Length: 558
Image 1: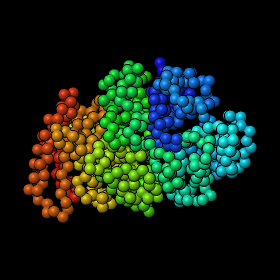
Image 2: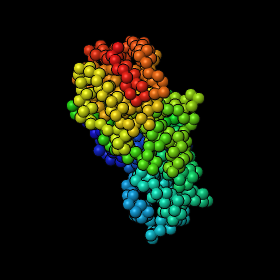
Image 3: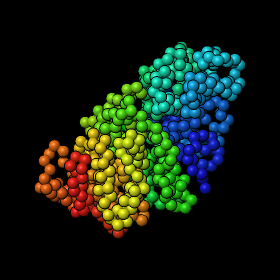
Image 4: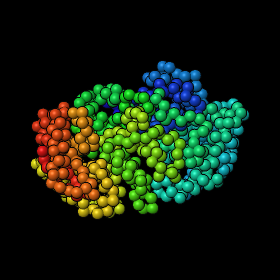
């Protein structure tokens, strides 16, 4: 049986050691036609490093004699381009650069890469300590000997993003100091592309966001950013058809596809694209865990994916206080989507307080994806994995600042009572936690804020999947709480009704809210998605919660 290439980014090893391979080599010709100097951005764990590795082995003259071995069973092996195995490859991977004494670490890494390049191609070049001098020694040698150079840079912004998260002052020094080697590196590349008869024929750069490139060079102005071009939407990631082929290969039932779509699918990176793609590592993680016993993993979220976002809490803080970005993220959780006039392709990491920049950053990080283009671009949370990560992000921030406090053991105890007995005290329990956390009152101004807090709490419960604004029978339920455990006996549709604190509270007003909710809940109950659960014997609770500001004044099962 072919091995699952989870976490594998070396193309040669993948081909040599009998790993399952999804052929993306048809994009090589597309990349050649797109331009000579390209930048391609995607969230982490979509397969960018494997793409870089594939380009390396395809274009490197060093592997010319092994072309058939590495590519004969691929699209490009049957349709090679004119540039196959015609370059010396200078490949950088910035993901491993330490942020301790980053300037020196970067200088050391680049010079080691230069030395390895010289040894690989047996070049008669003597290097010194200065990055710029060393590059132009190599550059001059290649030019004099009419040798074509292709530079590949993987994760160009990885260590810079880590630096930004840890200490923004150090990041500012990295991008502003004229003597910083990192800044000088990209200035050097830009000048090399402009020189007459330059040996530098192609550059391909991957990363996550455009921020660092903007901060270092005021944008990728030496070539093309192809990140949101429609023709490259599927260049990394895995399409539904590709997942189906993989599942068939491993005899995995198509029934499993429905659940994996909920957890790992629904990414769109280009306007006008109709189909969605899966996150590569997410679906490979699931497949690797599923195959041995034909059972779902205990934890549907790969710990490595969760750790990618674990340190982003600084994005919603200014001077140790929650900022406007927190409001944006909270509203996103409540509505499952947000709108933006357009995606910003060039913005500074030092200017994330602007809503347009922050929402664009969420897109590049993979925390939202394109839903549709209306007057504005509608962005949505792509799947259950990201929704839980977003929710945990908010919950962790609130808990860390003592804005919310909760005992997860107590929470899970209440959740079990609902899951097994249908006891709706869980909802009152959460309402009381919100009410008792007086600091949160500053953040509760409307129904959507209450909803966001419920979603945040439910992200900590392992028994359910909670959807906000779930479309049921041509309406949108506030919360649709469905089982994520075969032993769960109850599920719920929840309607939240909100009364502002400056409104006079009366029994008649509360009853009016309850009546409105009953009409909506009865309508939602007839949806096919709801009957899918009831037909399995899972019992439905139609719950209405009426809030007076932050205070729960009525909770009923209708």
